[in-house]
Length: 364
Ligand SMILES: NC(=O)c1ccc[n+]([C@@H]2O[C@H](COP(=O)([O-])OP(=O)(O)OC[C@H]3O[C@@H](n4cnc5c(N)ncnc54)[C@H](OP(=O)(O)O)[C@@H]3O)[C@@H](O)[C@H]2O)c1
Image (cartoon, rainbow, N blue to C red; front, side):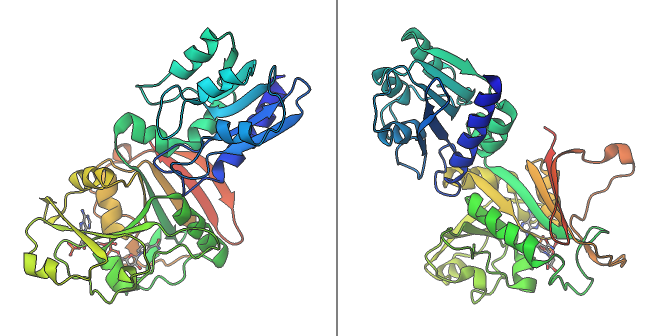
């Protein structure tokens, strides 16, 4: 039984992933309805923000009486009215006899209430199936619910000796096309991509997602004094939201001269740069629930020093620059001892065509 539940939960997780980039700030959810012989009757997933929840989509596509059937879902069914009516009520109404949930809702306001409602209606509830995978799937939603802050991932492409650019700021291309394709997929998964003024000036990146049927993330630029030329590709008016975080004392005439498609947001300063702690609060309130930082050494350093980073995704190419003055992926720390290092936990490693992709989590 347990083996079958795990198999179905893994299927739920892959269904849920189809909503990536489209359901934020909601969680990624997949649901499967099945009978006592583990025959799949129907499947559903949360497809876009404001759309039906996964359980409702699975019920709608069933086309048969669901009395006495089971439903498996990676997140506890909701018990409250949001944009759609409660899924727990729908499950009760359809006469479903068993609910298998991967994770209890992390939202303290609703945690456990859906399960309680189901149990009170005489439904058998099993929780904790593939809990780790379910946690990983909804890491963004969980951080948002618990910390009321965006989930922040630093993505970087380095040589074996940890360099992101040569001393003359040449960085094209450290990693190969397979790694760069992975980055395109990541851009689809995060609400926003963030970088520093220096990277925009030196590389002139587009920071768009160029994969078919995927959407562009919001582009966020840290530009303390508005020195980045407005002709830069990141400012192209392609219908995507572009946010520039600038210092609180940037003169209004400079702001007024900005193209209409750019949202300029004044932020408090810290050490003459954007105060990132304050900036992420502002961004969260502007609806940015997850950020992929694709920046240089200085911004990476600030994010890590301010303890804002949740995850690091490092693509390592089998190249050695060997130049002390080349740019490292993070610069500016003063650590005298190894014991003072930031310690991360490796979540996964993957060998791509020529490169390695390492995903690590920063400890709390
Ligand atoms: N291989 C890779 O993965 C990768 C990725 C990105 C970039 N790069 C390379 O990195 C190099 C640029 O690195 P970089 O360190 O000079 O650029 P960066 O970190 O992207 O940008 C730094 C600039 O951002 C602005 N900024 C505003 N608020 C900040 C804050 N709180 N903390 C830090 N910076 C803040 C500052 O300029 P103002 O105060 O004037 O605004 C600062 O000089 C380029 O050669 C690029 O090719 C490589």
